[in-house]
Length: 237
Image (cartoon, rainbow, N blue to C red; front, side, top):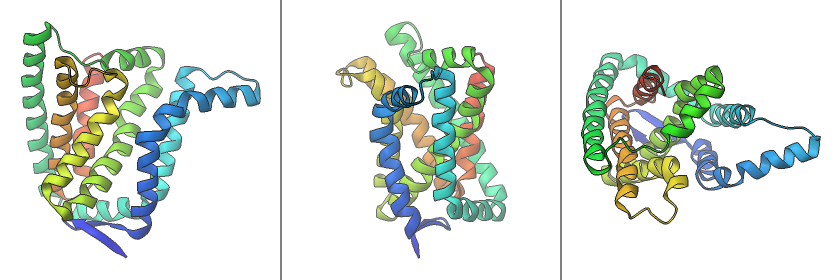
């Protein structure tokens, strides 16, 4: 049973239901109970789990669950990718130009307002790369982008596109930004720094949604996401 389609790629009834549960857990439950769960496991087995190992377990389990739930969608998206290869590459190229153009604008804006580029996610990511480079790079470049593209572009954007572009872009971008900045905002989401931090993720989310919409498959935005994160690591996270 096919649900709403975006340029040839749709979600089955099972993917809509199971994917919705996974999305709620990923956004609204796991980030807040993750530490408690691992502490409970440590207490139960009388062991200690390092932050690096905890990060690997967390993302590998999410990756496996995403594969199980969206196996059919990933297969259909792959078929659509090979059937629209040139169009996908064009969308990827435009997406990269848009991403780095917007990034330059935001960089200059944050420099003008704060005297430096403000992205608080840089600090924990840099520490993780330093402590566990191989595991963190794999998560940062492959696993996390894969999970996020399936959920935010394939599931949210694809599922809402039938209700209009504004709903699809608005929801997918807002939730993507929320995932990346909620821990830094506290009560300051309406402060100038909070707004800039949100925009730093709303802009790339809009670009990734555009690439998904333009290419019609998961692999377009995933390729952009992987390249962007790879360049971030290359430039010395």
